[in-house]
Length: 143
Image 1 (spheres, rainbow, N blue to C red):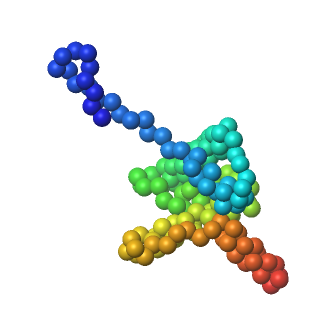
Image 2: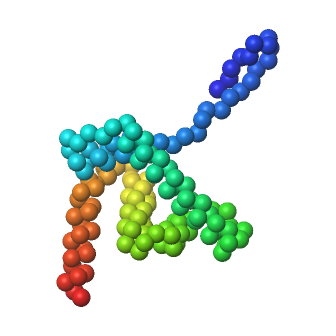
């Protein structure tokens, strides 16, 4: 973005603020999970802040692990993040986060290999949770 200043002939450039917002995702998830439910702007802002801080903490922790145990490597990999999540959070939550992330990476990989016309919408969150619950019940029955 280029702007003219008050001094004639002098041109300065300004950068746009680099900000990622999770607000649309929070609202969309709420609509998928609880049809007809409303959410205030303050609550959406709180969810946005929570998601931003959590993702920053996970990224920084994964990067620190990578630097400590793989010096010289410059690429943050999924195993770095999943290791950090497993070390930082309670086991049940960490397992859920890692399985969701693996599913997202798998869907991204599958969709990027397909032609754009063949790409389907992501499965509904309720369907995914039902599948996970059924898998968990099957594991319990086997034990």
